[in-house]
Length: 124
Image (cartoon, rainbow, N blue to C red; front, side, top):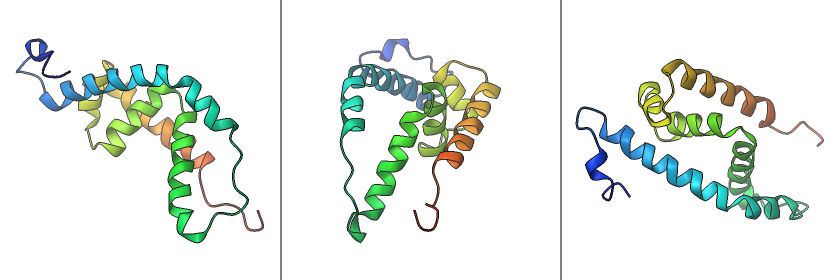
């Protein structure tokens, strides 16, 4: 898509931020299409006790579900900054919002994940 929209890129802006803006739009389109898939996954029963070698995989699945529970603006900001390594300024350009908004979204997303994702209590 970036190649198709090449004429829209302003050379005075960050190419990386522009490409992430395109990626964000593609992601949002896919999320709208996958809404029914997510609801189906949430209805699936979980196994009683996974084998130890699957714990890391399950932790990642738990994180993915926790991320899905975040509001889309917070999730997007956290993924851009935390996973893709964009600066707050670059993420703000991708999202089309002020830098302070991105910082607040990232902080709120991290706080929500800290409340909802963590070690299980002993005896759980």
